[in-house]
Length: 114
Length: 114
Image (spheres, rainbow over the protein chains, first blue to last red):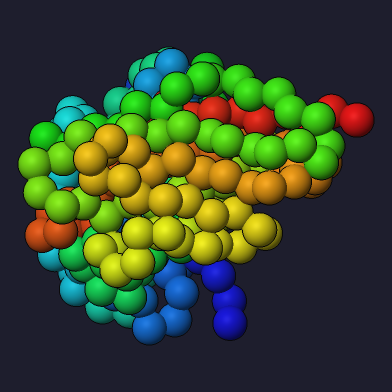
């Protein structure tokens, strides 16, 4: 059974640009969550999508957005990149929403903003 | 609001010694609790979870944790450390009904020495 796949693994962007990250959940999983990991702030929840609907959102500016497609694949977009957006972005998939079912994480996308 | 405190950002143990990583939580409702491990440049792997069943939870790789409501704790233990246990460990909490949002602690880096 394939795990959570995130693409690309590494990305370098210039300040002011925008970026799109992709996440393919485990087959059959309908919930996809996104997290940002930085040395200073640790792991922070960005948002969760379930059946193409955003279920929950963390405290991030509107430059951070996401969506989920009918096949449960998800993308997150960051517009007008800032140096502080450099981070490891992790995607997690779960069978269902609600927290009881465990979240399986992908290997992450390492974004560097220069 | 839910939160997690991990005491000790770095813990060093000898190979074969007891591993004890501390986690205290705060939650307004009975929580779900998780321990994840992260190896360098990797995503998060679930070690074990507590979702209101047995208070002593056994996980993978010989790890276990005990949920103590009176102490609001969920400490992670392993009787005998192995070199391969060297990694960063994260405690996380979620509240039922808040979708799949995980709130993570700041992490504890475990070093295992010969």
